Amino acid sequence: MLISQVVGPDGKIAVVVRDGSEAAVLRGADSSYALAMEAAAAKRPVAALVAERGLGEAVDLPSLLAAGRVVLPISHPDPVHMHLTGTGLTHLGSASARDAMHAKLEGAEVLTDSMKMFRMGLEGGRPAQGTVGAQPEWFYKGNGTTAVAPGKPLTMPGFAEDGGEEPEIAGIYVIAPDGTPCRLGWALANEFSDHVTERVNYLWLAHSKLRQASFGPEILIGDLPADVQGSSRIRRGGAIVWEKPFVSGEANMSHSFANLEHHHFKYDIFRHPGDVHVHMFGTATLSFADGFATQAGDEFEIEAAPFGLPLTNPLAKAPALAGTVAVTAL
Image (cartoon, rainbow, N blue to C red):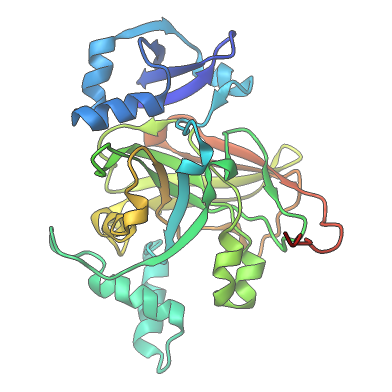
């Protein structure tokens, strides 16, 4: 089952449920956030609430997406209570990339910090159930004000060196009234980053990640397949100028999702009742690694079969800052 949100003719949000090719409006739901919080408070599966409410008017979701009426599949009434975060160095990549990584680990006398982190994940990222494994690389991207709806531009700041895509799977969570993190489901995400800045020095990773991100258009409710196979591509002037398959799911990762979730939600600040979390789990595929340079006007497209509609966003660049940001003393 997939859920999404659309804007109706009256300007109000409607929750859409899709099972296969049929999509329809969910009765009695003001938003996917309200639906998720009700399920979290009652400790009941979202699917059970959907079955009780039933479906109403059928909708043509691809047409609504093309018309710009599909919005983020979940948002918070107060955007600062949505957290966009992620983890890196979590994916093994293809078999050839995995073999190459192992060869580097075995043959290098001195490992970079990134390689050390990757090895920690290989050795301790999949602990036994109920035990704590190795910490992953972790980063903060922003709050709900930096979340971009499907189809809308991902805008790199005027001072940015790069605006590059990262095709990822995101876990979508709400925090129950008692402080319990509850996973609503999974979504495609574009963890948009500045890879040129990051390349200068890995200590600039935090700077490179403070960018917008997009996710959706739909949230997969239920279990995520162990092996997710997808495609990431870039169009320029309507033509595909870069394309590559990407893989995700635990079969292709050095960390288990349970371990990654623990190391995020172990912090009290991330268990504030009512908050929304969009946590991106990393990737092994990006155009920057192939030497591709994006340009304003390029369109990113990420798709994978379990997630329904593809996630597309054009790339834009904001004007450069006029001088420095001045602080006023009070």
